[in-house]
Image (cartoon, rainbow, N blue to C red):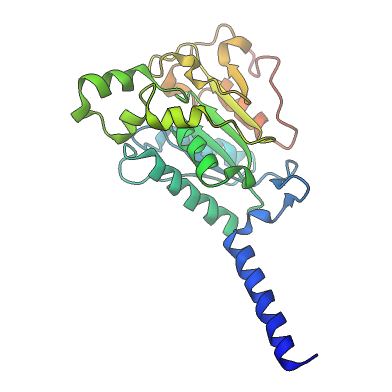
Length: 257
């Protein structure tokens, strides 16, 4: 082979490798037929906080996941967690890249409250279905929350960017509403009918997801919005959803009363 041709071939190979690296290690460990992560091999769990960015409640859930043998990390949101949800989605992407770059075959993402909206935005903006094995959202105002709408209308100066974006009918939510979930992305949305923060609670319902109001399984359960990440029933549902078995709609209360 002529030296010039050999150099050209080597240069082309370097370019191909660079492109693959630019796409990230998201292709590792996946199913080449579907372009999706292997469902039988759990990876790192990333937990996305709600409005305000507090990590306290999710830290307890992360500890429970770690006790079950999973690598679990709570994502630190930029600023105070009340800024632009699109920027927060970019921060989640950074956390995903860090996890994959550290050798995780994929990520499971848990979005609590507004963190579920952040997760939804991440899936869309960053082709999250190529990295996310499964997603679970807890009490997420995927179609907005009345309290945010009231704050946006009556006290806009006291309603930060994320608050305005979580108002029903906001440009961000309307844009998401017209964007279906990627095919084959397992998504479990859990909420409580006792939710007084996200009203209506059914704002957590998402077309294409497995939708589970806790009381449909455990009629006597009384769980507030703030208790969702730590309640034993919800924790059991999350652990089951992120296990090695295929994600399926639960048919019974996972915790006996």
